[in-house]
Image (cartoon, rainbow over all chains, first blue to last red; front, side, top):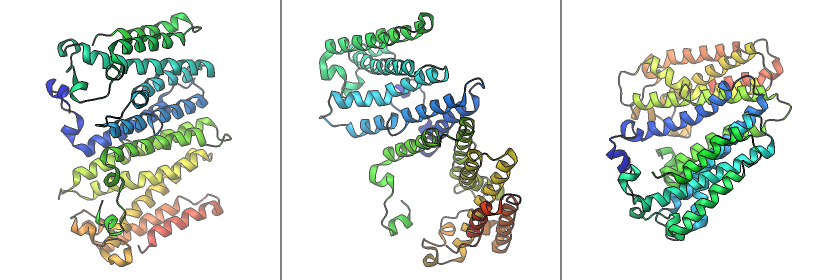
Length: 209
Length: 209
C-alpha cells in the first residue's frame, strides 16, 4: 500500500486478505483472462484467430513481456547505473506491452491483415512509452493537488526518469515524437475507425494529471 | 523451504531469488502454459479444439480450480472444524483438477467425443483424489527412510487427513473404491490405449513412497 492508497483510504488486496491470497487472486485473474477469450469470444470469429490472440496475450504477459519488465525494474532499484536503455526496456515491457496486447488482440480478432496488426502494434507501443514519459514529466512539473496524487514521488524515491536522464525539454520533445510516430501508423485505416485511437494518443500526450 | 528441501540441500526459488521474483516466475510460467498450447499445437489439430483445451486449462487453474483449493486450504489451517467435505474440496481442487486438466486436454486435442472426455475427466478426478488419500495413509504408516521424505509430517503439522477423519482401514477402502471407479471409466476405450492409464491408477494406488 503506497502513500496514495493510504491517503485515499483504499487498502490494497494484500493488506486486507494477506499476501498469499493476493498472489492467488492474481493467478486466478490471469487464468480468467485466457478463459474469457476462449469461452466468450463471439462464434462468428474463426477459432484460428482466437488461438492467435491467446498466443499474443500470453507473450505480452510472460517472460518476454510484463514479467520481464517487472524483474528488470526490481533489479534496477537503487542502482545508479540505470540508463535510458534500461528505463525504456522497463517501460516498454511493463506498460507498452499491455497496451500492445489490448490493441493487437482487437486487430487480430477483428480480422486485420498482418501489416495492419503490425502497424497497430507499433502505435500501441508508442503510446505506451508516451504514457510513461508524460507521467515522468508531470511528476516533476505539477503539484500534488493538480495530479490528484503525490507529486515528486520519483524524486523522493530516487527513481530514474526521463527528465532526470535527458532533462524536461528533451523529454517533451521525445513525447511529441512518440505521439507523432503513433499517429503515423494509423494513416490508411478507415478515418472514422482510427479517430478514437488518434484521440487516445492525444489524450495521453496532453493530459495534465 | 520446508524441512525436506533443507535436508536435500535444495533451496527453493523464493529463498534464492526473493519472493517477488518467485511470484513473477509463477506468473510467467502460467502465461507460458497458454502460449505453448496456442503456438506449439500441431497444425493438424483443428483450432476449435485448441480453444476448447485452453478454456479447460484456465478453468482447472483459476477461481474454480487450483486457486479455489489453495484458498480453502489456507483458510482451513489451524481450524479444528475442518471435516471430510472441506478436505475433499481441497484435494479435488489442488490436486485432482490438475490431473483432470492433463487428461482432458489430451482427450480434447485428440478428438475425443463429449462422452469420452467426460469419462476421462471422471477417471482423472478419481486418481487425483486417490493420490491424496494414499499420500495421507503413507504419511502415518511408513518411516521417513521408506518415504524418502519426512514421515509423520501431517501429524506434526496437525493437518486434517483421511486416516485422522475416518481411520486407516476406512481410508484404505476408500482408496480401493476410487481406484476401481477410475478404471471403470476406461471400459469401452481401445484396451491398448487404455493400458497406460490403468497402470497409472494402479501405480498411484499401490505405491509405497
